[in-house]
Image (tube, rainbow, N blue to C red; front, side, top):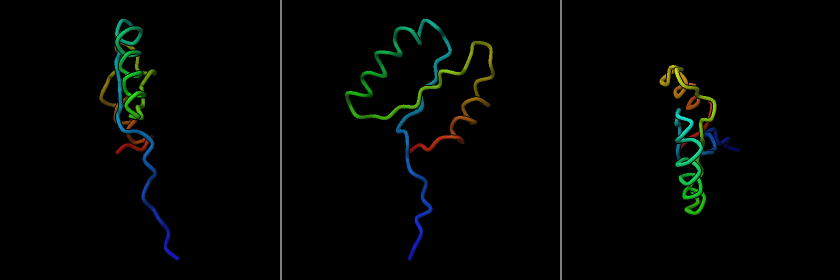
Length: 67
């Protein structure tokens, strides 16, 4: 019996926006478009203004499965 060790893919795309104006407007439209097209998106809602973006993105990518 063989064991499949390939990680299960959870998300197709990673989305991260820091500005409140983007999160409250454009982002909602983008997420709806992803849903309509059956694209599973991970949205980084935790990243705050002034926070270092690269370490946060790397951590999120390591914690989740992407295509």
